[in-house]
Structures are given as structure tokens and as C-alpha cells.
Image (cartoon, rainbow, N blue to C red; front, top):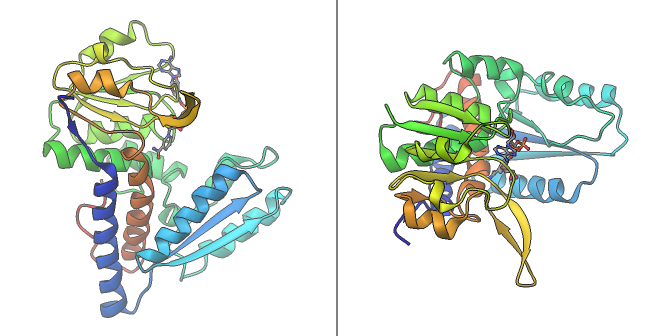
Amino acid sequence: MAATLIDGKAFAAKVRGQVAEHVARLKEQNGITPGLAVVLVGEDPASQVYVRSKGKQTVEVGMNSYEHKLEADTSEADLLALIDQLNNDPSVHGILVQLPLPKHLDEDLVINSIAPEKDVDGFHISNVGLLGTGQKSMVPCTPLGCLMMLRDHHGSLSGMDAVVIGRSNIVGKPMAQLLLGDSCTVTIAHSRTKDLPDVVRRADIVVAAVGRPEMVPGDWIKDGATVIDVGINRIERDGKNVLVGDVDFASAAERAGAITPVPGGVGPMTIACLLANTVTACCRANNLAEPEGLTA
Ligand code: NAD
């Protein structure tokens, strides 16, 4: 393997350490404990795992974790009433509604009912607009984690050619906005892109967020490019269940200058950035200085 491995697990531990330090300072100097409320509707097993992990890590960095588990058949009115209550609770600085929601609930309506300054997932339409216009916002956690790793590896990203594969609202589009904000020349590729291999071959930075196991082979990667693999795909290999990314790691690592592994790359950074967003939201709510390096 020629490429440098970008170790998301180690980086996430560093970010959590910075968050924990800031939380300790907020408690000591200001008597404030940041609080994150996570709302889970229904019993989707993957969502339950995520929510448990978020709650555990929230407590580990010294913040308060409030978990609200609602029945799968909860009415929209009851869910909106809970969000309203959390919006008005001064001990809650971040609110996250775990997606996907059961089909009878309108996801857009629910997300847009969260107070934008507490929307630590960065999915509220106000935050989307603020990010798109280069204003201070809450930034979606996964792309924020990718940006942090890229900045850490390269320093400045200015003038680099970046290709984001995938145009989802939670990863692809905000990732492209963040790269543009750091003065990259950005191409967003998607399922209808013509000649994807050629588009990817031009990139100094490739962010793959598609959800197709090992779709990007090494011969699409320009020599020395940096590859950020957002994909999390569970496949069966040699009779075992394994996690792989959207990039064929072995062949891409021969061409890339740096690459994130799956698992242990982008994944751990996502929850670390959720904690970072919560402490940032808490500082903003109290007109206090934000921690440096933990926002876009
Ligand atoms: P999505 O399904 O919402 O979007 C996928 C995008 O890929 C679409 O915009 C589509 O146009 C594009 N696409 C589909 N087929 C394509 C093709 N053949 N060529 C080019 N583009 C194609 O997915 P998402 O929510 O953005 O997630 C993408 C991946 O990232 C998934 O594997 C998901 O599990 C993973 N993910 C990881 C994290 C993390 O914390 N690491 C967070 C969110 C998502």
C-alpha cells in the first residue's frame, strides 16, 4: 500500500478529547453543562445501536444525554409537541431526531420543527441555507468530519479539484458546499453522471458517498489523490459478514496519496462531530467563545 492511511478512529478520539476539555471548562468557569437530546421513534435495530452509541459518547465527554424513546405508532402531533418542549428547554442545547422515521411521519416537517440553533444534525432548512450562503450554521456531522480530516491532512484545500460522488442532502450536497467554502473546484457526480471514471480521474480529492460496495476501483484514482470513503456497506465475503466502503480499498490505496479505511475512517468522525456541534450550539446559546477547530 502506497497511500497514507487517514485514521478516523484516532482523529475522532482527538476531537472527543477537545470536546471534553471544552465541556470541563464550561462547567468550571460558567456552571453550564451542554445537553444533547436524542429522539428515537420505533425500534429499528440499526437506529437503536446508533442512539445507544451517541448517548454513551455524550456522557463520556461530560455532557448530559437525554434519550426519548417513542413508540413506532407515535402521532405526528405528539412528536412535534416533544420537539417543542425540547426547543424551549434551556438545559437542552442540541436536538437530534434519529432517521429514518416511520412512514406515517413527515420527515421534513419534523426536522424543520427543531429550533435551527439546536439542530445539531444540520438538516433544518435554515441551516442548509446558511451553509449554502457561507454563513455560520450547524453543519451536518458526516461531511464536517470529512472536512476536518481533509484540512488536517492538507492544511489548505484552496484550488484543489474535488469530486463528490453522491448528491444526498445529508452527505453529498453539504460536502460539496463545505469544499467550495474551502475554495476547492467542486464537481458533484451522481447516478446520471456521464463517464464517471474520467470525472473521478481529474480529482485531487475524491469523496465517495454512494452506498455501493467497492464501486470505485483504483484505476479511477489519480496518482496521489486523497480519497475519503463515506460508504458503509455490509457484504458477505468468504462466508463472513464484513463492512466495506464505496471504494475498492486495496486497489485505490496503490494509487492514492492518502485514504480513509472502512471501518475506522469517516464513521467514527460522525459521532465525534455530533458532540462537537453540541458544544458549539451550547457556546452560541450562551454567547460564549466557540471551541476552535471544531466547526467549518
Ligand atoms: P443516498 O442513497 O441518499 O445517496 C446516494 C447517492 O449516490 C445518490 O445521490 C445517487 O445519485 C448516487 N449514486 C447512486 N448510484 C450511483 C452510481 N452508480 N454512480 C454514481 N452515483 C451514484 O446515500 P447517503 O445517505 O448519501 O449515503 C451514502 C453512503 O454513505 C451509504 O453507504 C451510507 O451508509 C454511508 N453513510 C455513512 C455515514 C458515516 O457516518 N460514515 C453517514 C451517512 C451515510
